[in-house]
Amino acid sequence: MSIDVNNESGTEVDEQAILDIARYALARMRIHPLSELSVIVVDAEAMEQLHIQWMDLPGPTDVMSFPMDELRPPSKDDDEPPQGLLGDIVLCPEVAKKQGDEAPTRHSMDEELQLLTVHGVLHLLGYDHEEPDEKAEMFGLQAAIVDGWRAEKGMTGPSPAPTVS
Image (cartoon, rainbow, N blue to C red):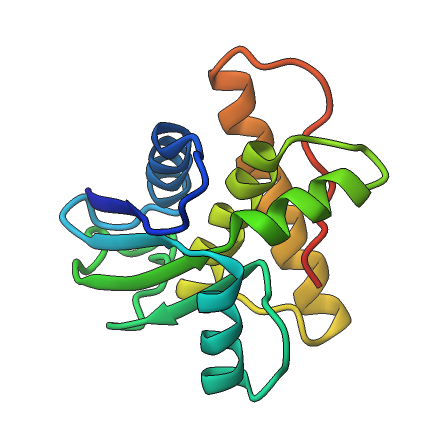
């Protein structure tokens, strides 16, 4: 799995954890090991520009996903998943910090960025949360991936509750 993490934000973030949880999420979703993903960490100003340009919404957001080859998790019957370019995930640590501070289960900016990385991966794989049933599926899968990764790393305590909408 080729995953690049590029921090352009000027904020110190745990890039290794972002890389690790992205790799874990892609493996858990059975994405081909030769697939490629890019994660870019930007400041609020750059995120706001992307948010306006692509969503026509004001202000910075927490995570944006830009799929390339529209890869999907293979079905249980598929022997070999296709390989390709997953796309880009863009994260904003300033928004992540605010969300972590305001969450019912307060957590760190890095924990929020880990959650947002999984959220971005799922969006790249075609998951969405516009409808209640889609939201239940996506957030359930997101929690299972974050909890599984945290357990594998020996981290204790509840995983961050989803703060993305």
